[in-house]
Image 1 (spheres, rainbow, N blue to C red):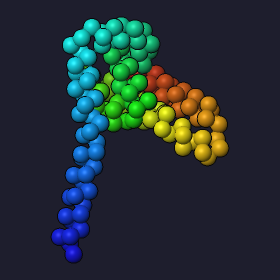
Image 2: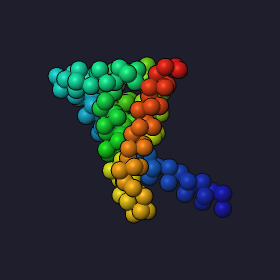
Image 3: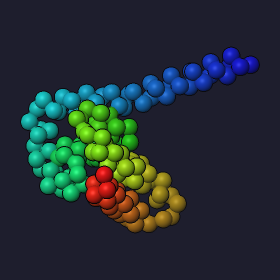
Image 4: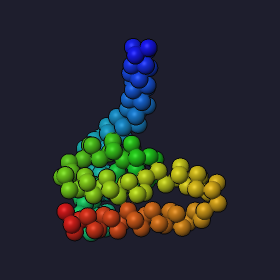
Length: 138
């Protein structure tokens, strides 16, 4: 009985690893590839003034956008490909914990009858405020 449940757990773990790897690994390679092109530098320069308020480099906008519009694992894959300090990674992770997967979760929220605009605005506001606050605290 124990061996069967251990095997099932191992099988489920491998399935989960495969499922997450299909998202994280391609995003990691894509953002790494972008770092060798002028595009990531352009994105970084464009977002740098806003990201500075959050204590983040301009290129941290990429994981924020991917995490908010695709899913949290895409944001994590993009984060892993950047050279972030512990402080920056923490701020980014906290922000994404508030505002990840906005498109997908908006569909769920809409079905509950709650105001979609209010929920999205609340989540984004909490993400930005937490970024500012943790930038000041850390």
